[in-house]
Length: 497
Image (cartoon, rainbow, N blue to C red; front, side, top):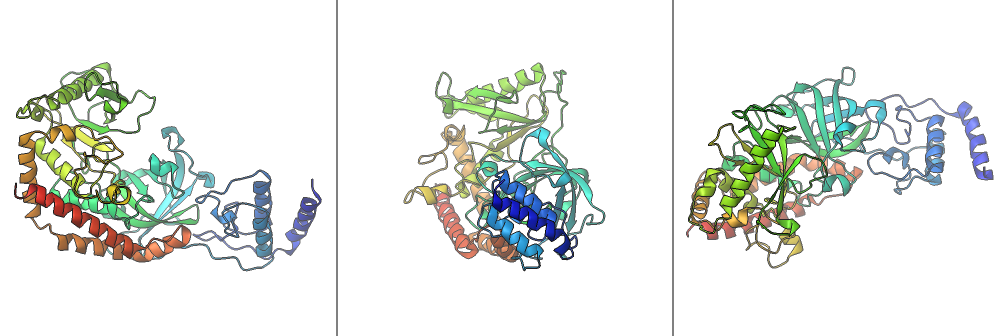
């Protein structure tokens, strides 16, 4: 052991007698509470020394309390700062809740970090919701009487690319969180990839509701405290799943073998992140093609485990659908036996207004009711993370292309071929005209955007202390510019032709 560390350990033995009274437990942990006991004492110094000696890496979400000098490293400098704190020095303040939104408190069992999104890696946790006097919201549980849940990570790109992580929640009991219908299953989404003032999913969901898709997930902003640390502004969002107030279809049993029941209901997704598991059905979009881009991977969310009969049925249904879409006769209506054309048109219109280049590439949900003659219904909408990407990536080619046309880094499935059908174009114009004449206009959407941004403004300022600053007004103006330009072009293409 080096002379330095021998001196440190000797000094720590003296601190046991010199340390002032500990900071008492509170809802938010003080900076320097490395061992998660809501006190700052010599024991935290010992834990921090162990972290430095073992080379514990900095992690923005989980080692924040240990990075006392805020240099995004866990090092000797932090030990010195913590020793000063234990001796009575003043620490820098920890980011805290703004008080402008409801607050969700979560404490994982053993204060363990949430490091996996695998199904088997759910962590048990306690939680409560403080409405903070927010209109129309009721508090649920309390610090003294918390409720139970399971929590794990979720997402693909958003899980790996950002420090501010998304989570999946499974409550022990159904609860009506933030005025939503009572349920156990919710997502906590940070929208860390949204450079448009958190407006991508917010406006995409709102357009889905306004155009009248059968179900649109609800989301509400709130602030989150995880294991005593404020982790910022999040969006509590309904998880897409079968339910009376979600995707309302007849649920069939896993491993069903009754041929009269396997026609529905089905909840499927065109999934751009397939893995090596058996939970996917693959079809070749362009028969005979060897290009991997021409393969569509469908994941199935309900039922979750398929019998041979179920898998054979849904694979054949999808193959028949695909074959009908790629009929060379674009006046033929065979494909409409498999897909609800009006719901598809509405789903597609929402994607076009948001210029969502991923709208027919991944996170594309569809469902089917029970019955031999029932059709695939596109929706609910979900991930608008790649909206208006042309605006940032392809200057000068931003707003005069359909989402399935180049330039785009993604491969759109089905919609480019379906768009060649004259009847689909007629239905598109019909749905667009209805939508534009039922209360939707540029001023109306601007008011919605302005009201939303104001509702999160104070919480965004608190979030900026914990993470990084967002220029809300600049981002809001950029979003308005993009959506108005795209809608103007769509109106030109669809309204009078």
